[in-house]
Image 1 (tube, rainbow, N blue to C red):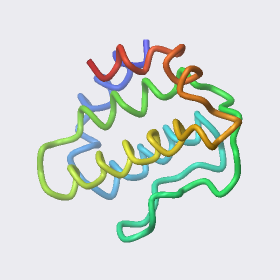
Image 2 (cartoon, rainbow, N blue to C red):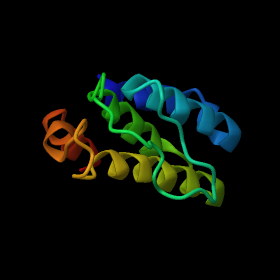
Image 3 (cartoon, one colour):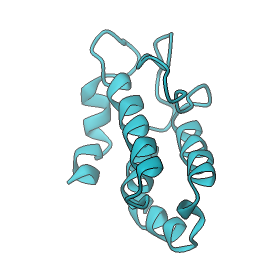
Length: 113
């Protein structure tokens, strides 16, 4: 569902403009946890200062699907990398709330491939 939904969102053309794409990615992050958002362009990688229990780990598919559907221009590539950084930060073993196995169990690996 989430991968198809990401494709449908991309089909509207809203992701062509990087400012709108960033807002859509932030909305997708809020489905995972309401405290998550894309880091600023020059911000350090640690976007969540506390351990999080992912309220909707399946929404990671939506986030990765949208990041995959972004246009291949410079600003959107940066947005995709920032979204991936957030997901990688959530997979950090030091975060007790979200573990790599929790992310893997929701099908993120399938979404990436």
